[in-house]
Length: 454
Image (cartoon, rainbow, N blue to C red; front, side, top):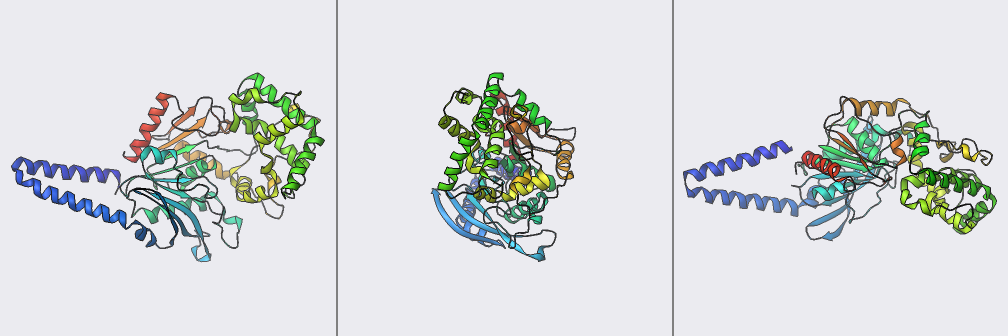
């Protein structure tokens, strides 16, 4: 039942009770009986929630974990078609978790855009704000949610959106209240794409830190953003640290290689430890502003820093483990999506002229083995962008002021209805509604509660 239906039902019951009360006190007995019957029905519904979940065709309960009194947590799988346009051609089990509070509370559909990474204690911000239930979905081709054979041509934004649509339709007969979708970064992107193809599946969406790369050939917006973010002193310090890292390349690479050998890590996809190091250095400013931020500017090493200090700082910001074969293989579905639909940025680095060895190392192809074809669809993100500007509704976009993804953000247009963009001051990639300026947080929270009927 939709929110309006619930309001009508409550209004009708109140009208009957009030009307009978005007006639005489005897009306109190049937009202109490009705209330008791409703309470018993609700209690039975909650007690039997596992059986109701298991009765959904294609749904399987893997485990139930204790959380706290009144809260139930289920590890689940839901069988999805490998190709929603041809469901007869095979299927796979999509992993998800359910944090159940009450069928009378809102349901929040959360995705990270990757694998199923969190456990029973995790609640997204909208889940906390609404005191709601939560579904956490693993995306197709990530984690264990992989068709066999894993034909990556079936990994695209429309197929993933259809996964969410089928799951919502399967659960709505149980969770008949309002639905809110949410996610951050790639999960935020996934949330928008789902709304594009199934705009009425949920009552509203909260999208955190989601880039919107509508022209993969033009990355000048990122260059301009990095040239103006923070203070001139901090930007100069970052560039100096990059240069110093490449000046000391041989020493740095030797140490990186020793770490890789000691930990059984290889670099066959990128090509060599030297290439991986250069890529890590090129990504330093982007990673710094996303995850470290202006409060860490004082800790940027100077050219006088020791090699140990410089190496540890680069690793802390750019994460050397990210460029190994094991990490690249884990995120291969993500890189594939970047190279086929989502787009990827390459940042200019004129201050490193004469120190770079590998032209094109920032291209997404560096992360994807050559035997996997990458055919980019330039119209995919333009279609999403047009929809947000012309037909979107009830979406809250939240960005960090210093987050480089804000170089190419989602923007509203004349057709955007009941949709807003909020920016957290001085923040990077990890943002929350709570961190907004008080007036903005109040406006954003009010919209979310209104969408959820809370």
